[in-house]
Image (cartoon, rainbow, N blue to C red; front, top):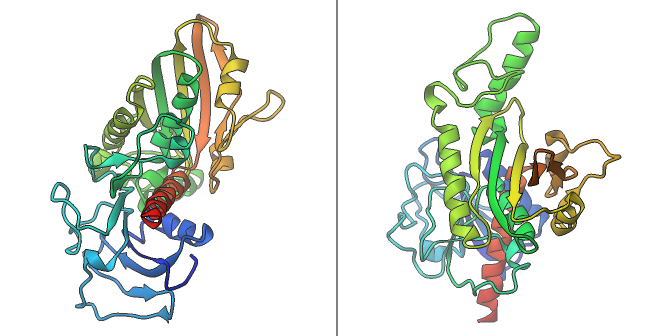
Length: 346
Protein backbone atom coordinates (compact mmCIF):
# COMPACT_ATOMS: atom_id res chain seq x y z
CA UNK A 1 0.00 0.00 0.00
CA UNK A 2 1.41 3.39 -0.93
CA UNK A 3 1.62 5.55 2.11
CA UNK A 4 0.95 9.25 2.27
CA UNK A 5 -1.48 11.94 3.31
CA UNK A 6 -3.17 11.86 -0.12
CA UNK A 7 -4.13 8.23 0.23
CA UNK A 8 -7.57 6.82 0.93
CA UNK A 9 -9.06 5.93 4.29
CA UNK A 10 -9.99 2.25 4.02
CA UNK A 11 -11.96 -0.19 6.18
CA UNK A 12 -11.94 -3.96 5.72
CA UNK A 13 -14.75 -5.88 7.39
CA UNK A 14 -13.85 -9.55 7.96
CA UNK A 15 -10.14 -8.85 7.69
CA UNK A 16 -9.10 -12.19 9.22
CA UNK A 17 -11.18 -14.28 6.80
CA UNK A 18 -9.38 -15.96 3.91
CA UNK A 19 -10.83 -13.39 1.52
CA UNK A 20 -9.99 -10.54 3.89
CA UNK A 21 -6.36 -11.66 4.16
CA UNK A 22 -6.11 -11.94 0.38
CA UNK A 23 -7.60 -8.46 0.01
CA UNK A 24 -5.11 -6.94 2.45
CA UNK A 25 -2.25 -8.67 0.66
CA UNK A 26 -3.37 -7.37 -2.72
CA UNK A 27 -3.86 -3.84 -1.40
CA UNK A 28 -0.20 -4.01 -0.40
CA UNK A 29 1.12 -5.68 -3.55
CA UNK A 30 -0.82 -3.47 -5.95
CA UNK A 31 0.22 -0.30 -4.15
CA UNK A 32 -3.28 0.96 -3.47
CA UNK A 33 -2.83 4.38 -1.84
CA UNK A 34 -3.93 3.97 1.78
CA UNK A 35 -3.58 6.72 4.36
CA UNK A 36 -5.50 4.93 7.11
CA UNK A 37 -6.62 1.32 7.43
CA UNK A 38 -9.39 0.15 9.75
CA UNK A 39 -10.01 -3.56 10.20
CA UNK A 40 -13.16 -5.08 11.65
CA UNK A 41 -13.69 -8.63 12.84
CA UNK A 42 -17.09 -10.26 12.48
CA UNK A 43 -16.54 -13.85 13.64
CA UNK A 44 -15.63 -13.06 17.24
CA UNK A 45 -18.42 -10.59 17.80
CA UNK A 46 -15.85 -7.84 18.43
CA UNK A 47 -17.13 -5.01 16.27
CA UNK A 48 -14.06 -2.82 16.17
CA UNK A 49 -10.35 -3.56 15.98
CA UNK A 50 -7.42 -1.13 15.99
CA UNK A 51 -7.03 1.65 13.48
CA UNK A 52 -3.66 1.62 11.74
CA UNK A 53 -2.42 4.98 10.51
CA UNK A 54 0.00 4.09 7.71
CA UNK A 55 1.29 7.62 7.46
CA UNK A 56 2.63 7.70 11.03
CA UNK A 57 3.02 4.05 11.90
CA UNK A 58 0.63 1.85 13.80
CA UNK A 59 -1.60 3.57 16.34
CA UNK A 60 -4.06 1.67 18.47
CA UNK A 61 -7.25 3.40 19.50
CA UNK A 62 -9.23 2.46 22.57
CA UNK A 63 -11.95 -0.09 21.84
CA UNK A 64 -14.70 2.35 22.77
CA UNK A 65 -13.66 4.90 20.18
CA UNK A 66 -16.16 4.88 17.33
CA UNK A 67 -15.69 4.99 13.59
CA UNK A 68 -18.04 6.96 11.35
CA UNK A 69 -18.60 6.48 7.65
CA UNK A 70 -17.50 10.10 7.16
CA UNK A 71 -14.07 9.00 8.45
CA UNK A 72 -13.68 6.62 5.49
CA UNK A 73 -13.38 6.67 1.71
CA UNK A 74 -13.84 2.94 1.08
CA UNK A 75 -15.30 0.01 3.00
CA UNK A 76 -14.63 -3.50 1.73
CA UNK A 77 -16.95 -6.26 2.99
CA UNK A 78 -14.76 -9.36 2.88
CA UNK A 79 -17.23 -11.25 5.08
CA UNK A 80 -20.90 -10.82 5.88
CA UNK A 81 -20.62 -8.96 9.18
CA UNK A 82 -22.44 -10.14 12.30
CA UNK A 83 -23.23 -7.88 13.98
CA UNK A 84 -23.46 -5.24 11.28
CA UNK A 85 -20.89 -2.46 11.95
CA UNK A 86 -22.55 0.49 13.66
CA UNK A 87 -20.82 3.02 11.41
CA UNK A 88 -22.24 1.50 8.22
CA UNK A 89 -25.83 1.80 7.03
CA UNK A 90 -27.59 -1.55 6.75
CA UNK A 91 -28.51 -2.95 3.31
CA UNK A 92 -31.46 -1.04 1.90
CA UNK A 93 -30.92 1.97 4.18
CA UNK A 94 -28.47 3.74 1.91
CA UNK A 95 -24.90 4.85 2.51
CA UNK A 96 -23.62 8.17 3.69
CA UNK A 97 -22.02 10.25 0.98
CA UNK A 98 -18.28 9.89 0.68
CA UNK A 99 -17.88 6.28 1.79
CA UNK A 100 -17.95 3.83 -1.11
CA UNK A 101 -18.96 0.30 -0.12
CA UNK A 102 -17.58 -2.67 -2.08
CA UNK A 103 -19.13 -6.00 -1.12
CA UNK A 104 -17.13 -9.17 -1.75
CA UNK A 105 -19.18 -11.31 0.63
CA UNK A 106 -22.40 -11.74 -1.34
CA UNK A 107 -24.39 -9.99 1.41
CA UNK A 108 -25.73 -7.24 -0.85
CA UNK A 109 -28.00 -7.98 -3.81
CA UNK A 110 -27.90 -6.26 -7.21
CA UNK A 111 -30.37 -3.41 -7.63
CA UNK A 112 -30.75 -0.09 -9.38
CA UNK A 113 -28.35 1.48 -6.87
CA UNK A 114 -26.09 -1.54 -6.21
CA UNK A 115 -24.28 -2.69 -9.33
CA UNK A 116 -22.10 -5.69 -10.06
CA UNK A 117 -18.66 -4.51 -11.13
CA UNK A 118 -15.95 -6.28 -13.14
CA UNK A 119 -13.70 -3.41 -14.32
CA UNK A 120 -11.35 -5.53 -16.43
CA UNK A 121 -14.34 -6.72 -18.43
CA UNK A 122 -15.89 -3.26 -18.61
CA UNK A 123 -12.69 -2.08 -20.28
CA UNK A 124 -13.41 -4.52 -23.12
CA UNK A 125 -16.99 -3.33 -23.59
CA UNK A 126 -17.19 -0.27 -25.81
CA UNK A 127 -20.91 0.39 -25.22
CA UNK A 128 -20.83 0.07 -21.43
CA UNK A 129 -22.85 2.63 -19.40
CA UNK A 130 -21.02 5.12 -17.22
CA UNK A 131 -20.58 3.80 -13.67
CA UNK A 132 -21.63 6.38 -11.09
CA UNK A 133 -22.64 4.40 -8.01
CA UNK A 134 -20.72 4.25 -4.74
CA UNK A 135 -22.16 0.91 -3.61
CA UNK A 136 -20.81 -1.98 -5.67
CA UNK A 137 -20.79 -5.75 -5.64
CA UNK A 138 -17.39 -7.28 -6.34
CA UNK A 139 -18.64 -10.70 -7.44
CA UNK A 140 -17.45 -14.19 -6.65
CA UNK A 141 -14.40 -15.41 -8.54
CA UNK A 142 -16.54 -17.99 -10.37
CA UNK A 143 -18.81 -15.16 -11.56
CA UNK A 144 -15.80 -13.24 -12.87
CA UNK A 145 -14.51 -16.27 -14.78
CA UNK A 146 -17.91 -17.14 -16.26
CA UNK A 147 -18.78 -13.57 -17.24
CA UNK A 148 -15.40 -12.99 -18.90
CA UNK A 149 -15.49 -16.18 -20.95
CA UNK A 150 -19.11 -15.77 -22.05
CA UNK A 151 -18.63 -12.09 -22.87
CA UNK A 152 -15.68 -12.81 -25.14
CA UNK A 153 -17.44 -15.70 -26.88
CA UNK A 154 -20.73 -13.81 -27.27
CA UNK A 155 -18.90 -10.93 -28.95
CA UNK A 156 -18.11 -13.30 -31.82
CA UNK A 157 -20.79 -16.01 -31.72
CA UNK A 158 -24.41 -16.36 -30.69
CA UNK A 159 -24.70 -18.51 -27.58
CA UNK A 160 -27.90 -20.48 -27.09
CA UNK A 161 -27.31 -22.23 -23.76
CA UNK A 162 -24.60 -22.87 -21.19
CA UNK A 163 -24.16 -25.55 -18.53
CA UNK A 164 -21.49 -25.27 -15.84
CA UNK A 165 -20.20 -27.62 -13.16
CA UNK A 166 -18.14 -25.85 -10.52
CA UNK A 167 -15.78 -27.90 -8.36
CA UNK A 168 -15.57 -25.83 -5.21
CA UNK A 169 -12.49 -25.88 -2.92
CA UNK A 170 -12.36 -26.12 0.85
CA UNK A 171 -11.38 -22.45 1.06
CA UNK A 172 -14.90 -21.57 -0.05
CA UNK A 173 -16.15 -22.74 3.36
CA UNK A 174 -13.25 -21.39 5.39
CA UNK A 175 -10.11 -22.31 7.36
CA UNK A 176 -11.87 -25.02 9.36
CA UNK A 177 -12.76 -26.82 6.15
CA UNK A 178 -9.14 -26.71 4.99
CA UNK A 179 -7.98 -28.08 8.34
CA UNK A 180 -10.56 -30.87 8.33
CA UNK A 181 -9.72 -31.89 4.77
CA UNK A 182 -6.07 -32.13 5.75
CA UNK A 183 -6.87 -34.21 8.84
CA UNK A 184 -9.20 -36.49 6.89
CA UNK A 185 -6.49 -37.14 4.30
CA UNK A 186 -3.84 -37.94 6.92
CA UNK A 187 -6.18 -40.08 9.03
CA UNK A 188 -7.43 -42.10 6.07
CA UNK A 189 -3.87 -42.94 5.04
CA UNK A 190 -3.08 -44.05 8.60
CA UNK A 191 -6.37 -45.96 9.04
CA UNK A 192 -7.66 -43.66 11.78
CA UNK A 193 -11.10 -42.22 12.39
CA UNK A 194 -11.76 -39.12 10.31
CA UNK A 195 -13.31 -35.89 11.62
CA UNK A 196 -16.58 -34.89 9.93
CA UNK A 197 -17.67 -31.75 11.78
CA UNK A 198 -17.36 -29.42 8.77
CA UNK A 199 -18.33 -31.63 5.83
CA UNK A 200 -20.72 -33.99 7.58
CA UNK A 201 -19.08 -36.89 5.76
CA UNK A 202 -15.92 -38.04 4.05
CA UNK A 203 -14.42 -35.35 1.82
CA UNK A 204 -10.86 -36.63 1.33
CA UNK A 205 -10.38 -38.55 -1.95
CA UNK A 206 -14.05 -37.92 -2.69
CA UNK A 207 -16.58 -35.66 -4.43
CA UNK A 208 -19.80 -34.53 -2.79
CA UNK A 209 -22.85 -33.05 -4.56
CA UNK A 210 -23.90 -31.48 -1.26
CA UNK A 211 -22.74 -31.21 2.32
CA UNK A 212 -24.45 -32.47 5.45
CA UNK A 213 -24.77 -30.96 8.90
CA UNK A 214 -24.16 -27.31 9.75
CA UNK A 215 -22.72 -26.43 6.32
CA UNK A 216 -25.51 -28.10 4.33
CA UNK A 217 -26.55 -24.76 2.80
CA UNK A 218 -23.05 -23.77 1.63
CA UNK A 219 -23.29 -25.04 -1.94
CA UNK A 220 -26.94 -23.99 -2.55
CA UNK A 221 -26.08 -20.50 -1.28
CA UNK A 222 -23.09 -20.30 -3.60
CA UNK A 223 -25.23 -21.45 -6.54
CA UNK A 224 -27.88 -18.84 -5.75
CA UNK A 225 -25.26 -16.12 -5.46
CA UNK A 226 -23.65 -16.99 -8.80
CA UNK A 227 -27.01 -17.03 -10.58
CA UNK A 228 -27.94 -13.68 -9.03
CA UNK A 229 -24.66 -12.01 -9.98
CA UNK A 230 -24.57 -13.46 -13.50
CA UNK A 231 -28.17 -12.49 -14.19
CA UNK A 232 -27.41 -8.92 -13.15
CA UNK A 233 -24.14 -8.67 -15.08
CA UNK A 234 -24.66 -10.63 -18.28
CA UNK A 235 -27.88 -8.88 -19.28
CA UNK A 236 -28.48 -9.59 -22.96
CA UNK A 237 -24.90 -10.66 -23.68
CA UNK A 238 -25.39 -14.35 -23.01
CA UNK A 239 -27.79 -16.71 -21.24
CA UNK A 240 -27.31 -17.32 -17.53
CA UNK A 241 -25.78 -20.80 -17.22
CA UNK A 242 -27.49 -23.76 -15.67
CA UNK A 243 -24.96 -24.45 -12.97
CA UNK A 244 -24.18 -26.90 -10.20
CA UNK A 245 -21.64 -26.57 -7.41
CA UNK A 246 -19.86 -29.78 -6.39
CA UNK A 247 -17.57 -29.97 -3.36
CA UNK A 248 -14.09 -31.16 -4.31
CA UNK A 249 -11.17 -32.39 -2.15
CA UNK A 250 -9.08 -29.36 -3.13
CA UNK A 251 -7.73 -26.76 -0.73
CA UNK A 252 -7.89 -23.47 -2.67
CA UNK A 253 -8.52 -23.02 -6.40
CA UNK A 254 -11.70 -23.92 -8.25
CA UNK A 255 -12.15 -25.97 -11.41
CA UNK A 256 -15.01 -25.38 -13.83
CA UNK A 257 -16.40 -27.46 -16.68
CA UNK A 258 -18.50 -25.58 -19.25
CA UNK A 259 -20.68 -26.98 -22.01
CA UNK A 260 -21.57 -24.18 -24.41
CA UNK A 261 -24.01 -24.57 -27.27
CA UNK A 262 -23.84 -22.00 -30.04
CA UNK A 263 -26.13 -21.13 -32.91
CA UNK A 264 -24.28 -22.79 -35.76
CA UNK A 265 -20.98 -24.64 -35.70
CA UNK A 266 -18.01 -22.93 -34.07
CA UNK A 267 -14.62 -24.53 -34.55
CA UNK A 268 -12.55 -24.96 -31.37
CA UNK A 269 -9.72 -22.90 -32.86
CA UNK A 270 -12.12 -20.00 -33.49
CA UNK A 271 -13.41 -20.21 -29.92
CA UNK A 272 -9.85 -20.18 -28.58
CA UNK A 273 -9.07 -17.08 -30.63
CA UNK A 274 -12.14 -15.34 -29.17
CA UNK A 275 -11.16 -16.27 -25.61
CA UNK A 276 -7.48 -15.37 -25.85
CA UNK A 277 -6.02 -12.35 -24.08
CA UNK A 278 -5.12 -11.43 -20.51
CA UNK A 279 -5.97 -12.72 -18.00
CA UNK A 280 -6.92 -15.87 -19.96
CA UNK A 281 -4.20 -18.36 -20.86
CA UNK A 282 -5.11 -21.25 -23.19
CA UNK A 283 -3.11 -24.46 -22.96
CA UNK A 284 -1.63 -25.94 -26.09
CA UNK A 285 -2.34 -29.52 -27.13
CA UNK A 286 1.29 -30.40 -26.36
CA UNK A 287 1.04 -29.08 -22.80
CA UNK A 288 -0.35 -30.77 -19.71
CA UNK A 289 -3.90 -29.68 -18.87
CA UNK A 290 -4.18 -26.82 -16.35
CA UNK A 291 -4.81 -27.82 -12.74
CA UNK A 292 -6.24 -26.16 -9.68
CA UNK A 293 -2.84 -26.35 -8.00
CA UNK A 294 -1.29 -24.43 -10.90
CA UNK A 295 -3.89 -21.67 -10.65
CA UNK A 296 -3.40 -21.02 -6.94
CA UNK A 297 -2.03 -17.58 -6.04
CA UNK A 298 -2.31 -16.25 -9.60
CA UNK A 299 -4.67 -13.88 -11.41
CA UNK A 300 -4.57 -16.08 -14.51
CA UNK A 301 -7.68 -17.84 -15.78
CA UNK A 302 -6.32 -21.09 -17.20
CA UNK A 303 -8.32 -22.65 -20.04
CA UNK A 304 -7.51 -26.05 -21.48
CA UNK A 305 -7.74 -26.45 -25.26
CA UNK A 306 -11.36 -26.13 -26.39
CA UNK A 307 -12.96 -29.35 -27.58
CA UNK A 308 -15.98 -29.90 -29.81
CA UNK A 309 -18.72 -32.26 -28.64
CA UNK A 310 -18.62 -35.28 -31.00
CA UNK A 311 -22.36 -35.84 -30.68
CA UNK A 312 -23.44 -32.21 -31.04
CA UNK A 313 -21.67 -30.17 -33.76
CA UNK A 314 -22.66 -26.86 -32.14
CA UNK A 315 -21.43 -27.86 -28.68
CA UNK A 316 -18.11 -26.87 -27.11
CA UNK A 317 -16.43 -28.11 -23.93
CA UNK A 318 -14.21 -25.87 -21.79
CA UNK A 319 -12.13 -26.87 -18.77
CA UNK A 320 -11.13 -23.85 -16.67
CA UNK A 321 -9.21 -23.36 -13.42
CA UNK A 322 -8.69 -20.19 -11.40
CA UNK A 323 -8.01 -18.86 -7.91
CA UNK A 324 -11.35 -17.32 -6.82
CA UNK A 325 -9.93 -15.51 -3.79
CA UNK A 326 -7.23 -13.76 -5.83
CA UNK A 327 -9.64 -12.84 -8.63
CA UNK A 328 -12.27 -11.49 -6.23
CA UNK A 329 -9.73 -9.43 -4.26
CA UNK A 330 -8.07 -7.94 -7.34
CA UNK A 331 -11.45 -7.16 -8.90
CA UNK A 332 -12.58 -5.37 -5.72
CA UNK A 333 -9.44 -3.24 -5.70
CA UNK A 334 -9.87 -2.41 -9.39
CA UNK A 335 -13.42 -1.31 -8.57
CA UNK A 336 -12.09 0.96 -5.83
CA UNK A 337 -9.46 2.31 -8.20
CA UNK A 338 -12.12 3.18 -10.78
CA UNK A 339 -14.23 4.99 -8.15
CA UNK A 340 -11.16 6.84 -6.87
CA UNK A 341 -10.22 7.87 -10.41
CA UNK A 342 -13.73 9.16 -11.07
CA UNK A 343 -13.70 11.17 -7.86
CA UNK A 344 -10.29 12.67 -8.68
CA UNK A 345 -11.61 13.72 -12.08
CA UNK A 346 -14.36 15.63 -10.31
